Length: 322
Ligand SMILES: [Zn+2]
Image (tube, rainbow, N blue to C red; front, side, top):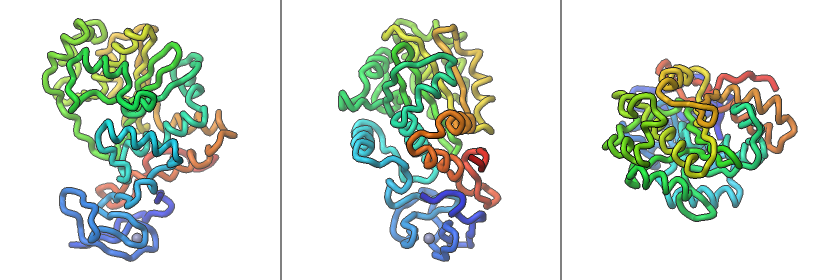
């Protein structure tokens, strides 16, 4: 994994070619066409990455992942069989960040403490579902299947919580955003199904209509997570929390704009957390946890690729100490 201390601080790009971004490497490849390609001509053989202007992709997906033990790979392969291509080899993959951080939170036992920090109350056991895939069922998590059916979702474009945390008394859906890649939020086809689905469930959880809340630009995914998540929690007789995780520079305005659209009460809440706050919490609360240093280093080292000015950017504004 190549982080900010290993990557060149400035992009070296010519008229028709580009230099490998790893420090000290002089290997040059042609500039990529508009659609990113992972073919031999764009590959630096020394560092086994496919180079593009501003970003790159690893030849081996595992090079972009912190956790690739046997259990990890079984789970990831299960997700892949039942979902879309995860694209985890891309340096700007939001899913790779999600996996690297949340899988550690789960396995290290740090997740209940973090949820307590965010929700303001104790959380007992947690069951974590990535991208809707349940390893026990070897298929889509059953409560999610029920919610998708209730809102008449088709497989393509079905709501897919990146991380679903089912605790004893609360269902938490996490929407992790990194701003690493420009993601296009697709306008769902047919808002009617979301308005009439679950016997008109949306009327009770949105201040206006879900269509009005979305406006022209979304963010559709957050609205669908609020709708389906609150519905799933109701079926399970649990509280519900929607947790938006975002970099310090980007997230707050989005949630501030959306929050008035959500009908909240003590049992149904929306919370935001920055990656930077998560880092501080983990550094302070989990100093002795297994692999904590690898986790904190990842936060510090994670690059956000090269900006329009050709300079390398860090993904998270976290302090260098610890
Ligand atoms: Zn190289």
